[in-house]
Structures are given as C-alpha cells and as structure tokens.
Image 1 (cartoon, rainbow, N blue to C red):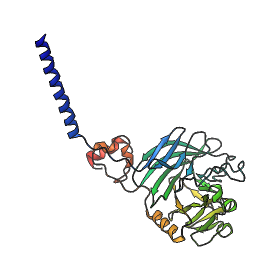
Image 2 (spheres, rainbow, N blue to C red):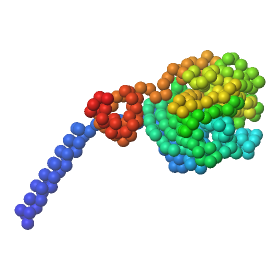
Image 3 (cartoon, one colour):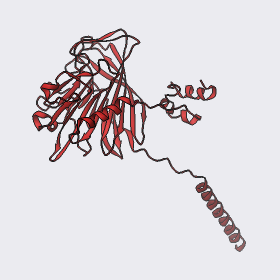
Length: 358
C-alpha cells in the first residue's frame, strides 16, 4: 500500500508540473487582445442596425421587410437626446411617412415612393458589409425600388457611415448608388427627394422657436424655400436650456449642386435636385448621390458649419484600404473591406490576388 501511495504522489506531482508548464507556456505565447473600436455598428433584432459610440447609440437604421422604405431613427444629439421624430407633429396621419431620415422620390416614372399612400416600395435585399473603427463605422446595404406591380425600377446600394467630430458632435454620411433595373427611369420635375429630414418637434421654428438658415446667409422658411445652397442648418431646443441641431449637407459631386432645399418652419427639410427640371437615370449609368448630416451643439456660426461641409466634401466615404497581405485578411468577410487595387467579389478572388498579384 505504501508503494502505491508513493507512485500516486509522483504521478500527481508530475501532472502538476506539466500543468504549470503548459500555463506558463500559454502566457508566454499569448498575444494581447486587439482593442475594441470606439464606434461600432451592431445588428439588432427585427432588421435594425445600431450605430454606437462607446456603447451609446448615435443612430439606428431600420430596414424590415414590412416597411415601405428603410429609414434612420433616431439621430441622437451630443446631449443624448433625439434630434428627429417619426411623423409630422401637426398631421400624423397623411404625413406618417415622415420617418426621421429617409431616402426616396415622390415621382419616379410616375410612381410615388415618398408617401405611405403611394404605390412604390423600397424593399431591402441584403446587408453587404459592416465595419467598426475608432473614428467611425460603416454599413453597406442593397435594396430594390419596386413599382405597384412588383416590377423593379431601381437597384440601390447605400453606404451609411458615422464619423466622429470633436467633442460629442458627429457626422452621418449617406451615399446612394441608384442604377436603372431594366430601362431608363425619370425623376419627375418637382419631385421630393432623395432625402428628407423630420426634426424633433421642439426644434422646429413653429412649435419650438428654433432657427433654420443656409450657406448663403439666409434665415427663415420664406428666404430659404427651394433656394440652392451647400447646406441648411436646423437647430433649436431639445430640453430646457439645451440647444442642438442638424445641418443637411449637399455634396459638390451631386447633380445640380448647389441643390434647391425644400424647408418648412414646422421642422422639415430636404433636397430637390429635380426642382427645376427632371433627372433621368440611364441604364449602366448609375446616379450617385451623397448627403451628410452634421450633428451639433448650440447654434454654430456659419463658418463652423462651412468648415464641416468642406471636410465632408473632401473626405472619401470609403477611404482607400488595401491590398490584403495574408490569407486571413480575406476570411470572414474581410475581402469586402478592400478598395486597393480593387474591390474583391469573394474570398477566393481575394486569395487569388495574393497568389498572382492581379
């Protein structure tokens, strides 16, 4: 019996030495975990994406199949309060399509995609890519614009990006690529769209005494209504003693820039590139549009909004990234991130580039 116990002690001691050695080896070879990005885009139930800074929501993208069109709600200001709302504060029935921030046209080949009573529907197809980072986050989505008979009129590819600015201010960038699905389509003259913004009730001039002004130095609905501008800023109270707002930015590469803005004192603003004449989207000649929303504190000076517009006008939505250096760069959807020397269609395409250099 004594000999058995001696053998058992030696075996246990040996196993302890092996275990300790394995743990030390593991610690010696362990790599520190990568830092968690400050800005993330988080998928949520019911077809939603939440853009978050330090785990605090900045905006949420809704794209469920039951919706007539995708939209962004809320858009959160520096104080943590929403700067947009769902629906018109004075007409919640016939203007229930005012879904915070949305993208559509009221006349596309005679089909209304703008209102809930129109026959058109923008149906989400898929999420292409999600990307996180310390300075911002990105989501890429695809959708189809369907006529009342379900015939596709447009194929849409949308980039939604969040970029951090100093303090707690930030920039929401939306880039749309609209491609004719079968034949040329016409955006009718006077059509609303492609972007609308419904401000929170108490930011509006009518309900809360807010201010609306543009890059030309004009202020108030009468002076701004359907006038061309680089940007329009809407700001007002979000809580007693707290003023915040949004500036809608028109990119210089957009057609007919500076674009006429449609603005109302009840808290609504949008752009109308077809205000003076129709626009036609030809097959194999996609229409590319880019808009920004500058989320800010207080009533900023015009030069401050102008400085943000200048940054927005110069910054590429997807900064050049690439080429991949190793096979792991191509895995788990990583191939979708690269823009240099080109965008890769698949993991296999990305790995083939690593082998051949082309």
